[in-house]
Length: 414
Image (cartoon, rainbow, N blue to C red):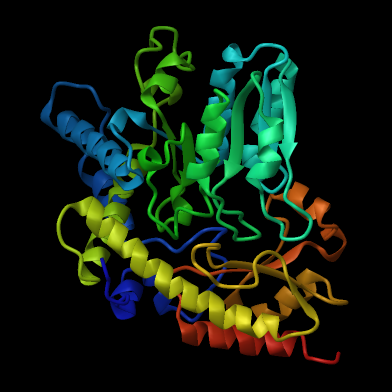
């Protein structure tokens, strides 16, 4: 299906913060929030903020709204059923929860594969299982292209492998990893695949069932919503986990057994605004039919627009002899999302970013909690990378303003 271009006037009108003077290009750290998300949070708090599970009407209404949120999020990610959706405060918190729940399944000598390019949220919780006797193996990016190769993963897998943990898109490199191909290889060895999609979900439609991943996690505050997160797990995998809740919450009570203290109801309800926004955006791009199809159409248009944004920036960076792009230097939407990192010869990354700040453009420097990758690349001494992370509400004019600001911050021949 061919979609129409994004209506950027409509898109930007949905984000009140964009009416201000600042240009936001630190979106991989946290996107701006949709007005309709904030409206739904407010409405829940002011009209149905009661405890769930009671017999009176307002409690039943509140419970229905939270249940609808589970269903909407399941549809957004392509899950088969709402109880495959576990909610929590952040990706990090959910992964530590999952690690704690899986600990009873780990036996001495069992193996877990992690990468050296993930955010620490998808490494640290699994390394803690070394205390249970787990053996941690590292799938490293190749030195030249900084890609994760299936040829390098295959020798790491064997009959003792229980779990492979990988990012869908690197929050520094922007590289998209082929999770469906990874899942097939991992499953061939009888292991399970866990995918951290924090840097992917703002840019592409998620299809957990289609990709046949076992676990999939991301945070909504990177996807135009509140500080809240979702962990998908195949139902049979979640059912096999112990309860981390009160002793009377049985392991059969999914997902509540993995949501100790329960979830933040108002934030869950707020996330339904993300789903409705994407569906409406898909309609405006010419899509009809089921809501899921409209969401996919929205992301098709988003990917095309973001590719143009990334190419405008990358073409400037490629032309600079004193700049090294960390990751793919092409904007090809099949290879990367528009999270662009680079370093400048002879300059500390924080020095460049602080000069761009004066132009009221928000970008960032650092390791972005992918500290192991920055150490592998030897970039800690320059305070990590300069990262520009674009999303669909950014414009080409904004990218041009950034290029002008970068030109002032890192003049050629300095």
